[in-house]
Image 1 (cartoon, rainbow, N blue to C red):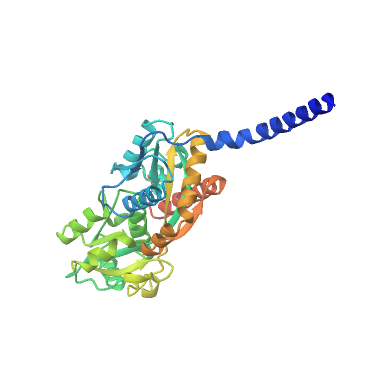
Image 2: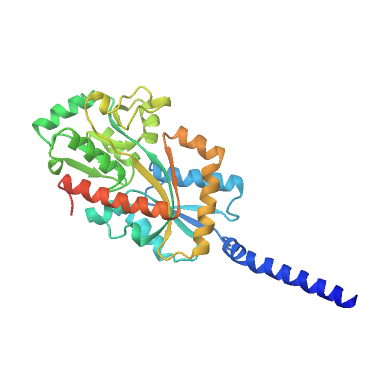
Length: 333
């Protein structure tokens, strides 16, 4: 009888040990979490457009849901087409307490020569969404449509200047270049003026320093509502909704310009696996939240959530696309 009980206890112990060992990798992968405030680094000025907005939207959703467990501190490091921000990210180290917003500059900077850090010099955590661009002019500008822009540039490719932020190779720069190329104009002769953010570019336009601003759609409604600017077209596959539903696409105006931007969240190069697992999970939680889905619609963003190999493959594909794009435009380094 005693042997039977001992045998039973032994079996139960072995089963418990097996269950423990089986669960250990999962526990280990889930064990890490931030223990101090997290730096969320943005390569644009505060209030400088959709990059800053993306970070602060995630910050709010995470704080409201107590997802992270420690404060999220947004740090703005504009300049060099996000390169300053990403250098700062890598300098902070691999301890999991630093993340950053990733943009198309991850694949365009090495091509343009704007900054050496590319998508393989950081740790991609997730692709979040696509957004679209809008062309703004001053309210008193003689330019009323994309067709009128074409007329001016057909005579002189440098007749009009395009401002954008946050730097060379940014999505807003690419969108403007795609638009000009679609007009049949020599892009290499165009005038493209970088700023630290959309707000700075619009301020310069209102002051008369530049003619047109290429900006993400979410930036446009406040500027238009203030009565200082007008929209002459959106570079999108179809009209946007809400406050921009009245703005026709470039295609509707006979200009076959198509370009979609994307936004990502990245970690420093060499980020440890347990840190990656934590942030991918945190981003997945945010992406599934009702608040995030409402923000996608409110900001004219289209969901394009990718992680792991799918995100890596997407970035490799985008790098190839941008190399070809800029080479065709004659502005490759």
